[in-house]
Length: 117
Image 1: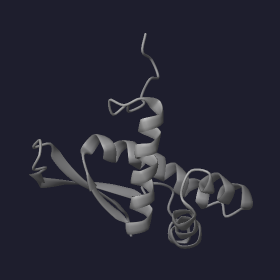
Image 2 (image 1 turned 120 degrees about the vertical axis):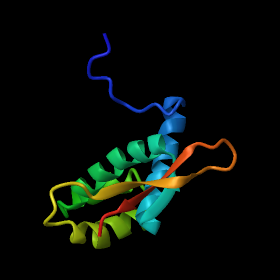
Image 3 (image 1 turned 90 degrees about the vertical axis):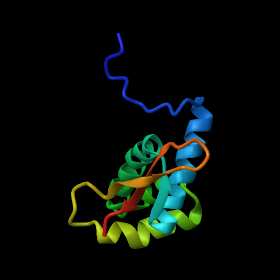
């Protein structure tokens, strides 16, 4: 049975998938918007939402947790700037917007994942 198996595999092995999601999360936090495919956006959204929720606690444990998962520059921006904007918000920190255009190589659909202001 496949109950409670909701992870998005992205057709990659575990270490490659984790690396891809970390890079996407770093870019999303640093640039506050990223253009990608819907599956990658959903996987990144879950990851980033959890990190933002953790950053809202504003304690040393949360900072170290985020630092272990993101780069130093992205961690500082998330902890000191972005988390402060979402203190009164309980969730829904990111938004996925579908685009009409498609990728040139393989015509796969594109979306923009961005942080909600």
